[in-house]
Figure 1: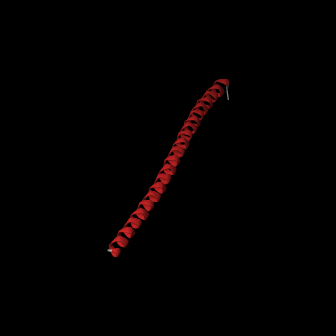
Figure 2 (figure 1 turned 90 degrees about the vertical axis):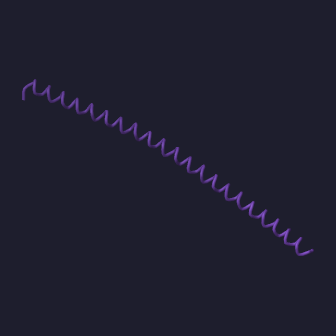
Figure 3 (figure 1 turned 45 degrees about the vertical axis):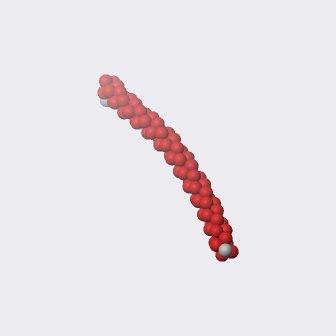
Length: 80
């Protein structure tokens, strides 16, 4: 193998290595972006779960209040 062929092969290896490094960096960047998106989506889901729980609690309080008012109304009707 002569020096010229060796240099050509080294250049090809260097080019391929450069492409691999670029591809690895792209994958790393995409991975970071996806992790950030996952974190954001998890936060949104958690916020929705908290809001849903609060809504259910509020709904139960309203139901309890309405039941109490209906009971008072029933007692008022019974006493007349």
